Amino acid sequence: GVSLSIGPGDRLGLIGPNGAGKSTLLKILAGMIEPDEGEVGGPRAVRAIYVPQQDAFPKGSSPRGVVVEAAGNMLQTPGAVHDEHEAETAADRILDRLGFEGAHLAMSADALSGGWRKRLSLARALASCGGEPDLILLDEPTNHLDIESIRWLESLLTRGEFGGTPFASVFVTHDRAFLESVATRVAELSPAY
Figure 1: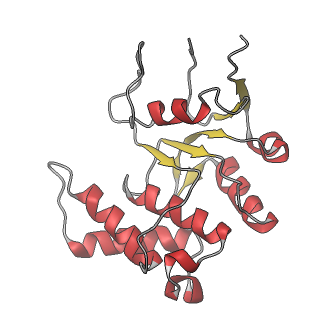
Figure 2 (figure 1 turned 90 degrees about the vertical axis):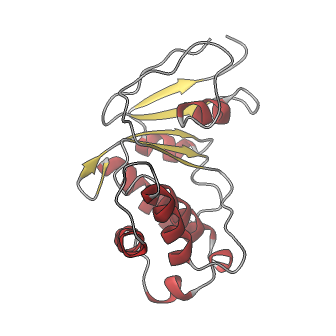
């Protein structure tokens, strides 16, 4: 029973009680699961990325290794010209844009703080689409973030571009301050109506 549209540059905040289907809707929009009925429409080549609520990385992996792997997977799509060097170059560019340097690059991904883990999740998602998303889908993006990391994320989303490429965003949040700072529209999902 949900009908909504997301236009270029929209920043849609999804709110509602736990269990209302907010995370499920994000996964449907990301193409990770099929809707029970209805359809999801849009331009054919929409590059949507999904950043889950829980950040999970292979044990002992480096931030660069995580992002190189995602970039390599993206380069394996049919018709793509790909090699390890291209994946590494894409990963380095994305990590640099997200502020990774020195100590954060040298750490194990599972040893990063909550804020840096969220940045790494975003970097991995960006690498999966070549660093040029049309739509960013975020599930509870401020969980486990400190104030500095929340401000960084707000700035990224309100700029509405990454590396010169404009994008729209849809995010699930219970963080009222984040919602008020970032959202251009708010939609409430509730089984009550």
